[in-house]
Length: 165
Image (cartoon, rainbow, N blue to C red; front, top):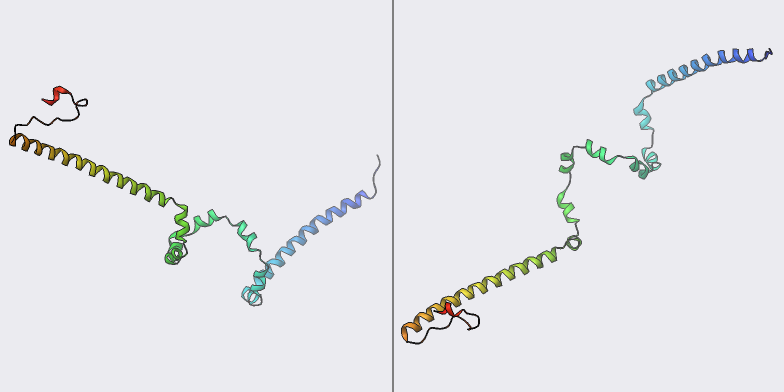
């Protein structure tokens, strides 16, 4: 069996390096905690140029990361709606474009056509009723005033001869 003489040194090196690395990480972590605890955040913010910092922010990238549905779920919608100026919002609406997107003209045309047709039908039915009323009165007057034969109810081919009696 062959033994590598350097192998024992590597093994000792590993046994020494791993605890040292762990100790170095612990020291670094504790040093960071001490610095953060000692740091005066207000003084740091006073020295920070926020505008310069904001100039470096890619707003579109930030907005791409925002979950709008989750944001809306967390908002108090009543409070948000109370801040909306409805009159200003209504002033921004292009009513012409809105009406162009609807079929309001067609609806008005259809409804006015329907009303007009119903009005014409009503006038026709009233005219037929008036015509019948006048025909009855004229028939009564003619029968009382003269001995003329009764006026036929309609054209002979359309009226049943038995119904004319």
